[in-house]
Image (cartoon, rainbow, N blue to C red; front, side, top):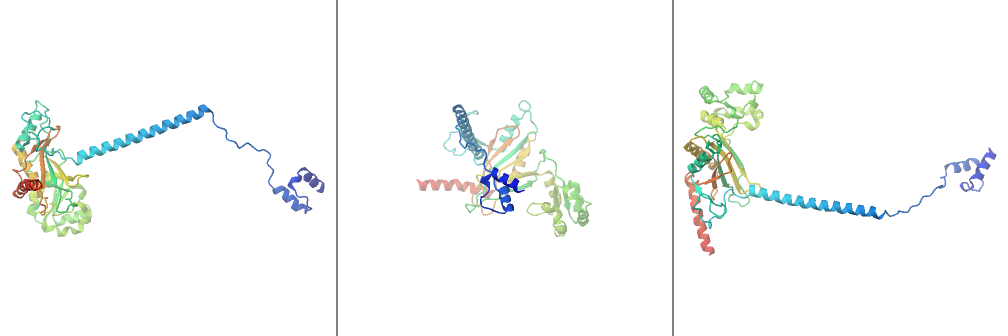
Length: 369
């Protein structure tokens, strides 16, 4: 044991102290001390070859140019997109500041150089009848649409009218291309229930209908519109949670005494909706169908008046400005649009407002001059 230890100590004298120690202590020092470094490598960083450095620099410049080009394209695209949105949502359908433009003496002219002619509704409808004639585009079922521009400003400069929508019963029914709505009516009077079913209601029930809906015998998902007579409205409270948004409401026009008119309105009526511009909240747009090309022009005109009156009903009582700022007739499968005069169809209050505004403008101009 001692001979082997002495031989081992002679082989690695640097690892062990020469001071006499117990065998166990010297053995533990030998076994647990870190070994000396046998191999040491160079720590220098040699430069890459010239052509390698040139290759990396060329790739770096290429990536930098590609990134710069991408940023430029992205910036141009965003600007073009913003410009397009502004043209669609901010600019009016009708040209502005046409007072200094001359009136066209021919039926072919540049619209940017002359005033846009304003015509009556019947003339605009007849123009589309010629466009969709069998000898032209041959689209007799093309929808004729009414287009209105509204001023949504109120007495407060930062407050504007909210979005609104509704259904209007037109005097002459036509196919809009949309599925016919399914209607359910709540009413206590049995005679009115029979009249509603005869008018085309899909379902008409009394107090027993409330229990049928609660038990699942009838499902509200099967009906697009829920109507109610005022005599049963308060008793529909237990099923309010089942109906949710379809619950009859006076503001929505789904509650009324004339159940036959209610059913006809929502079964055969025309939807209209006012959408405020995102970038110009003062401007509102309404576009809704009023007939098909193959209908008589007089019937389409009556539908136009019905839609105009329905939109006019949303005007606020405290509005001092003209609600309608423009109107036009458009059509499917055609880019043409004809500006029409709304004066013959507006109510007296609206006409007075429109007549007063030019006078105010003249007075202001005279003062400024």
